[in-house]
Length: 324
Image (cartoon, rainbow, N blue to C red; front, top):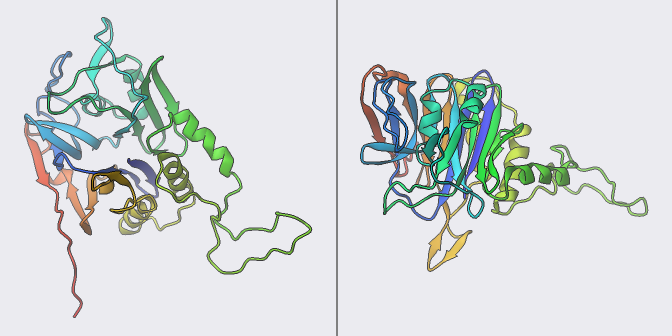
């Protein structure tokens, strides 16, 4: 159902997979600093941080799946079905809909610390965008180069969790996802040692036996364990190409192929897109299910002092480089 990740070398990288059986129609959306942002219950904001990310655009409003602002703060919303709880308007709170949440935070906050202060004042409304776009049950990861948090709006209120692994998937709630890592503390990138029994003579029988026991199924809990292990053990150079390549390899460890997650009626969940944003440079990279070539959009090549919503359609067809 989706995996978000962070990665730091010389620069800081933030991105996610979006796993679903269909697309609402996704575009790279850049909000310039003077594009007026309208909110259902709060005052419009005319001057704010610029941002770039993947969104479905409806009524000239970018409904972001994930985005990064010009200060290097990233945020993504992931499915959190049967756990997310939104509420009616509450006086004295910032009443924000779930589809405005990413924009509300990124247009005003430069760091995770600032975002935490904003989240503490928020009430997430049970208001759908329209009749065709119903409520999406979500939780969120918010990250900068120094910290990550997970935000969940549940039955007993809004929870803010420190996220030391910089990974988020779907269910269960984040504290339970983190607790499950205890079951895998014996995992190692090195070949296994024989600890099964002193009465047996067990041997390594091949190369490539690192991470023996790492779960490989597509459940959100297993994807969390797998992505956390791969990210925490990743090694790459600090250059841009090496870092971006490694980030995509981290998320490719939880890629969903058509046919492996059968939803019935001939429908299958797939990884619709994978993103990676260099939050320091404002460059948004992505691949699509039918296009494995990495495509990039640089927000700083646009007029960020304007008042426009800048849109780039996804390049979805496979790009194959013939060598002969």
